[in-house]
Image 1 (tube, rainbow, N blue to C red):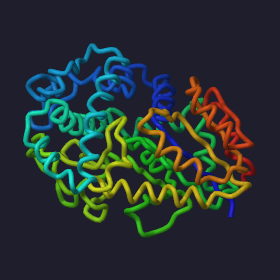
Image 2 (cartoon, rainbow, N blue to C red; image 1 turned 90 degrees about the vertical axis):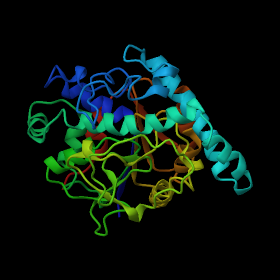
Image 3 (cartoon, rainbow, N blue to C red; image 1 turned 180 degrees about the vertical axis):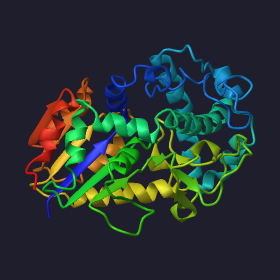
Length: 358
C-alpha cells in the first residue's frame, strides 16, 4: 500500500493566503497568521460583537505585558514565547504530583504571565475563528476553480485518482483551511480521534483546532478562565464543528511555542493525537512519499517534531518546502533522510506528490 505522509505547519496557511491574495487583494488586511497581534483591535469580542478584542479592557494581562496591534512580528512572537515558556514551567508542576502545593500556590496568586496565558488561549481561538469567516465557501470555491498557480492545487485535485492508497496529513495548524478546501473539492476525509469511518485521506491535528469544541457547549456567555489547575478534557468529550465557531467560548488548542509533551494531564486529547501521529509515521515504508511544509523548529517544538521524524522510514523520499528553512532543521533532515530534497516554494509540489495519476 503506497502512502503519502504530509506534515503541515503555519507555512502552509501563509502560502495559501499569499496565493489567495491574488484573487482578493484585501485579504491581508483581514487575516494575518504571522503577526498574531496585528489585527487584534479589529476583531470583535464574542460577548459584545464590537471591535477591540485585544485591549486592556478585554485582555488586561496581555495588554500590560505589551501586546499591541502595532507590535512587529518579532515583538509579538517574543512576547508569546515568554508567556508560553512560563506556562510550560507551570505544566511541569502539573505533571509532578509531589509539586501540587507549589502548583496551587502559583494558581492562587496573581501571576501575570499565567493570567496572560489564559487570555492568550481564548484570544487565539477567537482570532482564528474570526479569520475563518473572512473567506466564504463561494469565495474559496472560486479561488480553487480559478486560474490559481498555488502548487498544492494540482495534488489536491488529483488526490483521489493518485497512486496513493493512503494520504495522511499531520497538521499543527488551528485553522481549518485544509478541511474546508477538501469539502469544497468534495473530497472525503476522516479526522483522527473523532471519525470512526476510514477514508483514503486522514487528518491528524495534535495541537488542536478551532473545530475541536466541547460537546453541546455553544454559548453566548464568555469569560476568561484564569484557573489553570484543572483536569484536561479527554478527546471523547470533544466534537468537530465547522459552523458558528465564533460562538464557542471554549475549545482545544495548544498556543504557539506550547510544549504539548508536557500536557499529558491538562491536554490528554493532544497526547492521544500525538501518539496517533507517531503511529501513522511508523507505518511509512521505503517507497512512500514524505512532505514537510512550513514547519518551525523552535526549541519547544523540537522534541515533538523529532519524535515524529525518527519514527519515519529513513529510506523514504523526503521533501521539505520552506522559502527560508531553519538551518538546524535542514541539518537534521539531511542527517536522517538519504533521499532528502529541499524546495524553495510549493510550486512544484503537485509534480512531486502526484507521481502516477490513475
